[in-house]
Structure formats: structure tokens, C-alpha cells
Amino acid sequence: MPVYRDEAVVLRTHKLGEADRIVTLLTRQHGKVRAVAKGVRRTGSKFGARLEPFMVADVQLYEGRSLDIITQAESLGSYGALITADYDSYTAASVMVETADKLTETEGSLQQYILLVGALRSLSRREHGSALTLDSYLLRAVSMAGWAPSFEDCARCGAVAADSETGYHSAIVVQLGGVVCDTCAPPGSPRLDRGTIALLSSLLTGDWPHAESTDARTRSQAGGIVAAYTQYHLGRGLRSLEHVTR
Image (cartoon, rainbow, N blue to C red; front, side, top):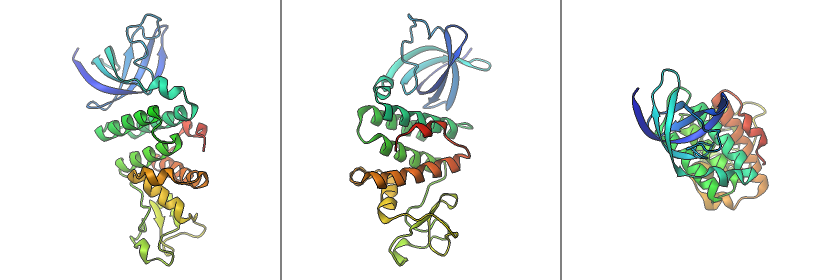
């Protein structure tokens, strides 16, 4: 059987038999891989905690018929314990790996791998608030998948925000791709204040000084939009999202 080696982040695990686990990995070069880690649930397993969710490892695998087999795993990023020690970080990371799992169902992506590893590293180091880190990750992940939102010009007709009466488009429609002008806005479209739209833009572009200067109400409104936008374009709900504290 062919042997290959790659860097991988653990998305999820499932029990198999009495001592094994099926591990779903997002790898750097081989996309998403489902593999068996034999004996990993035994106390003296050679893998230790290196194949738990949110961990990043250098893995060696045998290519199997239906499932590959993990033969070696060396830790590259021990983020699991640091993330699970904090509930908000844990729930945010759970949404991240679930999103990455769904976005890479048909094919892998180096960009998605790098983005996810960076987000998990940031969570483990408490670099920013967990909700802000999550929302920034979600916006960037769906953008990389081809659904980049517009938070400035009209997402439908391209009308420049500066040309509107208020200087910004306040209506937002996730089905249309972001903010829309008054002409394109369907009746009853949700309206956002300038601060919330500015925060959404900052999360997408990585303007952390501005994002961290916002208040809780603005963050909560932005988080609701991010959740709706992500789930609409994924075409399904994210089960982990209901546990995130806003």
C-alpha cells in the first residue's frame, strides 16, 4: 500500500471498535482524509493526544481501500488542551472545524487549511475575543469558497455606498450577498447601523484594532449576520453554532 505524509488538522473523531478511532483530517496537500488510528483509545497509545480535535500534526498514512491508516503522528500545534480549557474558545473552535468540514466536502483547499490552523492558533493564544475570531474566520472561509460578501457597495447592482443619502447602504440581504441599496432592497429587509456594517467589514479584512474597539451590542448584531450568511451559503445549519455565547 502507498505511504504518504502530510500536515493535518483534526476536524473530528469517531469511535471504531474497542480501541480504534476514525479521524477526519483536513490536510495541507491531500485535502480531507478519513483515516483509522489503531489503538488510539488505549492508555498506552503511541499517538497520545495528538489526534484529538483542534490538534495539528505531521502524520504518516497508509493508503487504504476505503479508509487510510495512520501509522505516525507528531505534534505541530498543541492547540486542543488550550482551547478546551475555555468554554467560549471551545465552542468557537467547534464551529470552525464543522465549517471547514462542510466547505471541503468535495475537494480540499490549501487556503482553507491555512486559515483554519491560523484561527485555531489565535484562539489558543487568546489573541482576540473568541466570538470576534470566529466571525472573522467564518467570513473569510466562505469568501475563499466563492461567496465573498459586500459590506460597502450594493451587492446586487454595485451602487457605490458613498452615493447614497446616508453615505452607506443600511439594508442587508444575505441571499443577495451582503448590503444592498434602497432600490435593490426587498420590502422588510433588515437594516443595520453604520457601526455594525463597519465591524463586519473589519472582520472580513482583519482590522483588529477597530473590531476590538466595538461594543457588545454591535458585536452581537454582526455575529447574527455572520451566522445567517454562513449557514445560507453552506445550504445547511451548523449544529455547533447554537452553543456559541454572543
